[in-house]
Image (cartoon, rainbow, N blue to C red; front, side, top):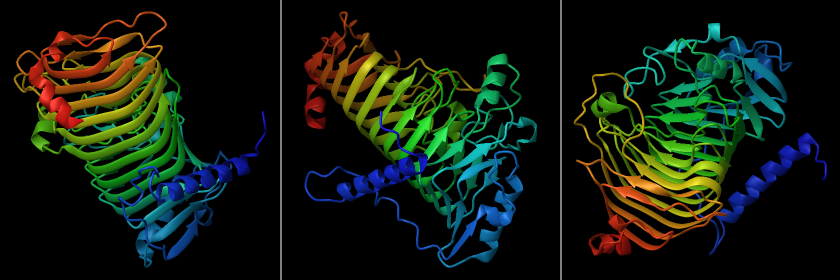
Length: 450
């Protein structure tokens, strides 16, 4: 195998990313891209290095104060067009720090922002209003390693630099039952708009990797996200109660869903009423013991108008998993998943109304979700164990489910579809679809949606 020095690997990765963007901007036949969906940052009026604030990239010095001082300096200077904070090559050990508006955080090739494993000094913040408590435990939650709240014009990028969560200490606490509060994300942006995250590696997050919540106009592209398959709840990218989000050209291999769209949890999500909508996901490749692409199960604010296309998942539990539960309320509607390639996946597709727990006993047992207008088409799978399951809720049947051009094959006969409390149609589906999807009543929606 040809050896490529680390510096050249970074430059090659950046060159390939630039080439992909230029190709996507080309004429007929070029790949679709969301690169223009979020305004690019203006020319930053100031440039500063974390090393100028007493930081040291030796892997031993704790740089939390240096990052805080650098961000405070950006806020004070108010340079025209904002400022860029440069992280040079080296290993920059740090605790959590927050970003500010009109800022670019730029990781050079060979730069690693590495989280401290001293969990005792990790700050706590209030739970999200749409969750009512920490996602794992009642009460507060640990702040993310890189955090932003109420920001505009934020760009987190680099030359394939790495953000390393060193999550093993957190995973061990979770496995041993000694975790005192909900684990931190690597990156969380709250109530923010016009944000771009690109050209980076995220690895070993304590919990979910990237969590934009209550955000709008977010572009996430050209990322590599890695965690061991046995690392608990290390979702890749989880847009949550957010609108106009685009995720494209990412390679993800983690211990939980690669991409999961969410919108709040039971009575808290219903009260907030903030849906996730206008979400585009394309050209995602990866592997997970759970799902490649998922919606839910926390969908109490609603999820609608989602397009996920050109997905390639291998060695995974589910290809596509759309999940909710009684007590969730909310809705999942107008979802299209298209052009999916699966290899060595247990379930090709699962749409289920009995997934996920509840934050407390105060949830409304009668709050039933509405699942309507889902189109899954152009799916090719090999080494598939089971075609899938579509199981609605008896008093809130899933409606207008359209399956089209789905071919799932296995080394042994693929176990058949299982369906209940669902209506819709199936066109050109192998193995043969369940009878609930073969009636003519759902055919008109299915043909129109195609």
